[in-house]
Amino acid sequence: MSSPMIRHALSRRRLLAGGLATAALTALAPHAGLAQAPALARLLDDARRFTGLHALIVARAGEVLAERIYRGPPATRPVNVKSLSKSIIALLTGIAIDRGVLTGTDRRVAELLPDSLPDDPDPRLNRLTIGHLLSMQAGLERTSGPYYGAWVESRNWVRTALARPFVAEPGGRMLYSTGNSHLLSAILTRTSGKNTLALARDWLGDPLDITIPPWTRDPQGIYMGGNQMALSPRALLAIGDMLRRGGVAADGTRVVSEGWIREMWTPRTSSPFTGDSYGYGWFLRETGGRPAVYGWGYGGQLLYLVPGIDLVVVITSDPDTPSGRTGYVDELHGLVAQIIATTM
Image (cartoon, rainbow, N blue to C red; front, side, top):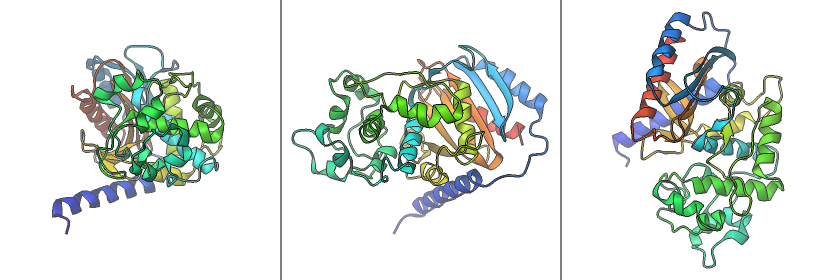
């Protein structure tokens, strides 16, 4: 039998997932008094104390309540969003499934990338699925953290990622790894016949009217999945607002299915570093007493959605300064909690 603590954790995850799915996909009535403007202004003035903070945008129900540039470029200029691009890769994967480019998350990676398997593959590679890559439950030794440098210096990032030894079973504990997202980029490229940049521009850039510039590619020309993508704060806002509307662009164009948003925001594992739940490319937590979902990149790049109150918050920061171990990202979570309080 599971312990009371485990049962409580599972119940909380189910509640969080249910709250997000219901809130994200239900049209809300117009809000009376969207913001206490002076309180929000004071809060954002005070946020200048975060020396790594570059830009911050707060929007509710499609209305921009505040846009602040503290340091760095204007909100219209693309910036490196680091690992927040993992959330974008997860979004592109779902669009590929919606469009029939991929048949589902149960597709086996070995069948999709047969020529990239190691010479003597571990039998567990045959069990590895797209879903495992999305939820960071591949079981393969990570290519992030201390392993990142050697991985990006290798001659073939896809083959090297698939040749990592298994340190857990597929579908087991969370092992956060950029290599997993890069395998998704390779799969998207192989199955669609277009590179990931072209897909991002066709499937997100055009319907949302946002600019997506080229980013880092591996030695084989595959655009990096899970890091180094550049998007402006306003582009991130457009993506967040589309998700807030259940996958529909401002002009009514369907970008991604409601079903895939539910899939991305369903907790499947939890981060060993933060304890937050993790779905398909997105973290989930309770912030300010509300179920929330967020994409997170190194340095403090955040795309935050609080579906129950129609809130979207975009934060960009110095991409070269650690955010996790310094406590900065915890401060940003606290800032979002305060923003929630001032916009209720």
